[in-house]
Length: 296
Image 1: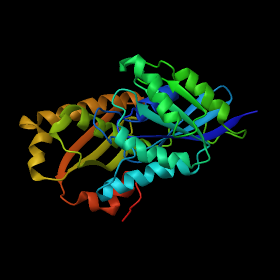
Image 2: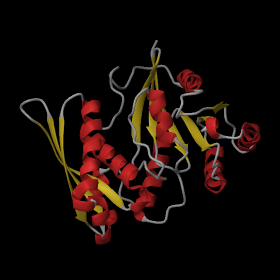
Image 3: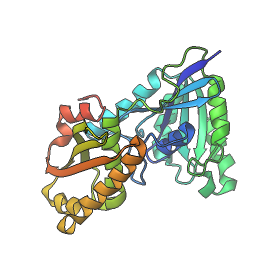
Image 4: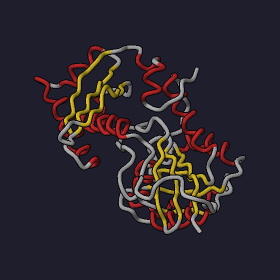
């Protein structure tokens, strides 16, 4: 008898949700960076445990939204929980982010789904404080179980995956056995480039940037030609992205191309160019491209 269900992975920004989803799936399906709010749209990672398919909704971090983009991201996070058979709350055991956790705990307390608490980054946390943190959170929400994991090293991930499989309802699988994500290759390619932007520019590039797909073409020799547009909010940021004599954008492109070639299993030709658009975060078209709903 097969099982299949949806698990919503919720938490404050930078709790390690995407790293955990990647660890549960067993390969990279979501981009990660040290920058908060890296995940924007809801993305499904697909994990297998025996005869069970676990569909993991990797959601944007839930925080107090201020702009349209923020509101769209928080809306996408809660949407990920709407059809869930179980909810996993991921908490950074080091930083904890109590001010962002409190409203999230209040919302979860009234939900009927089975809920698991995951204290992440325990490899870097003070062990004595973990039990106290867990007890405080369990006192506010009726979690079925608490897991102490390090998504980065894999510690505790297998036990969590086994428990999630037990919570999934009986039924046919929704996806083929070899599919690991619901993201199209076109969207995956833009996400890989965006990850390199964050990795290589760190705090130099503000959060207001996006990567838009322009074309995705399979050449006659089987290789893939990808053209993308990096959109930034201010003209002063263009020199930062390009770098001296174009060295920075070349490095970003080379790193993204190398990773995409490995992910797709074929040679990739990646072409990037930069566009300045002060109002890109108000563009309905861009929201659709990156998988977010337009919200007022």
